[in-house]
Figure 1: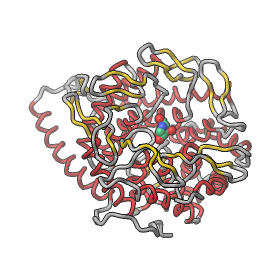
Figure 2: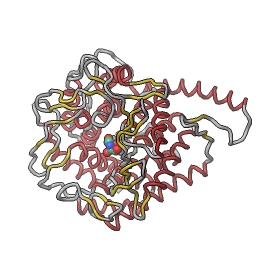
Figure 3: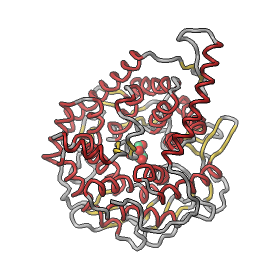
Figure 4: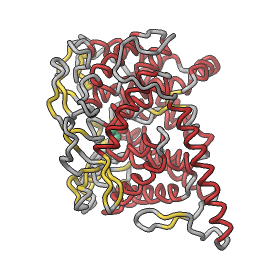
Length: 502
Ligand code: DMJ
């Protein structure tokens, strides 16, 4: 099946495949780095106390022994079990656990098993077999999408569709794919707008839609899930519709190559012309790159490379205190605000994946400084004044995700040290008797009664993968969706797994 788009997109530059380019750039960079390390190692005193590099808050990183890494991976695994047991005890069958009141929480009138579906592939990767089997049984017996309720397309796609597909690829359990196909069929009416960009909500039983005011992330973050669903079911229309939506959005970029943060899906008019990489735009960019890699889609590659030039030109902000990415007017490129936050912290991972490892490392240092300001990262910061403008920490994963990518690509032990900082902070400030709680305010460390399913899907997964043997999951063999669900790059591998495992 040909997954290339049948639509025409703008942009004339013929560029190399992303994977190739990244690999070559990285090989060259790694070789240079290897020489530097050799010289450094030869010139300095021996011993593991030797500082290899520092992060922006002057934390010296020393190499970690294999047993220290193993112990940290096991620690993360134990904490996953701790949070899962809390869910099992107080919220079994519901979407999530409220970790302070020990009450279940559902998003809609019927549970869609957010936590089990979102968290299943993490259990599989951690080798938590009995728990994974229990979750699969619960999903098989209780998950029913035939519900008369409007659901948010974006969240259902990245959490549920993503979770079902990756777990199917990891286990070969056909019931998961059947559920994903059923969900996909019910979601398809969301694309029936005059522009092809999805409405925000769809009724799972009737197919009715609502919500015309959307944003690039919600329009563009369907490509991976519906592309994989198309591959696995042999129904290319899933990919075609998701692709058409992305192209419709891309065609509305400004003359300087930026997109805004609000768009009407019926008229195609921008409702907010603020450009940035933050929430509401973030995974639109992420998916252009990742779809280019996963589906070898040259249109996505062109759209991504074209967008990246504008992002680095107008949104990147070199300051005396480091590299940041702020906001700008999508038409003029003029700086509007200087905010960076927990959601923006996904961008070093994307930069690293596209081959810009140095830039990724600089931005990650800034993110780490943001984390250390209060000992846990705030949701938003003004990076010029270094004042916190949104003090919440809803257990977000992005900074850990970027740390994992950078460690995988560089093997620099400073990223392991960063990971340990995050784990220590989670234990100190967020750990509760029955799980982990979000923080209402990172300054006072006041807790909030929420433990989102992405904590299972992403936060603990990336933290675990950071310390686990790299053979646990090769970054070169999968592409993560924006909810950290790994999709096999090699379709044949997924097919093979599905033949073997029952
Ligand atoms: C997740 O649901 C996804 O990572 C999404 O892309 C953005 N926000 C949350 C986690 O912060």
